[in-house]
Amino acid sequence: MDFPRYRPRRLRSSKTMRNMIRETHLSPLDFILPLFVSYGHDIKNPISSMPGQFQYSVDKLKAEAAEIQSLGIPAVILFGIPETKDETGTSACDPAGPVQEAIKVIKDAAPELLVITDVCMCEYTSHGHCGIIKDGDVDNDSTLALLSAEALSHAEAGADIVAPSDMMDGRVGAIRSTLDENGFGKIPVMSYAVKYSSAFYGPFRDAAESPPQFGDRKSYQMDPANAEEAIREAGLDIDEGADIIMVKPALPYLDIIRKVKDSYGYPMAAYNVSGEYSMIKAAAERGWLDGEAAMMESLTSIKRAGAEMILTYFAKEAAKLLG
Image (cartoon, rainbow, N blue to C red; front, side, top):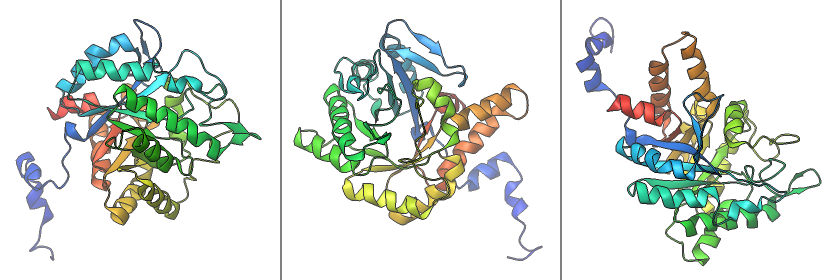
């Protein structure tokens, strides 16, 4: 393939030509939209650090779910904001909690929409960490029972998929066993298998009202410098029964998405997290870049790296552009 006999520009000469040879195609079917569900009534609170995103009370979700379904987006993932928090996050399992109630409302309003639930304790604990605190750190093994009970409560409320995001060792196996033992063997587990301790989560902590009240999460979330560890983490979750594995965040870890995909060939999700979203929004508001173009380029890169499913706050906006 030597120049001048081979000229790559021949196949870039028009939009139609470029579309014909395009290797990676985005579709609304690729997207999962995160939703923040709050206790209370008649609430649609804008999230200041995430322009265009809101906290919704359950009664506000009916119209939202119908719109999401109409755009061809196949799924949402729910994060709960409870009325009360305590040391062990007991409200996470409340059958009348915001996530449990939201599942029912969404399934009624948009029956074709898959409802995924985030399974973690940080939104429900008074200290903002992802499990039971012992000696100043999250105790891994005693937290597994809480996560399993939370996942079961979501399944009982009608969730289609449960997604543990806590990064406790062994939590996928514990949740899988609990679901199976209680008649929910058909519920898939989407594991946050490779979740890094990232600076890009900042706006999410405003949205979910879940910043840690002391310390950080580096003892259970992954070191951003590690790649081989990602392969081990994903392999553990697959062995424990995960049906879908996820890498989070997405854009700073495109190499990890590809590495994990090539290693296992498993259904792959990637989370285009709040900081990635807010950076583009902030730059676009200031006229520093074309927001729509940057959004679509970012989402395309995530799919090109190997993710079939993209959790993204851009889902509605991108779906409208894709038609």
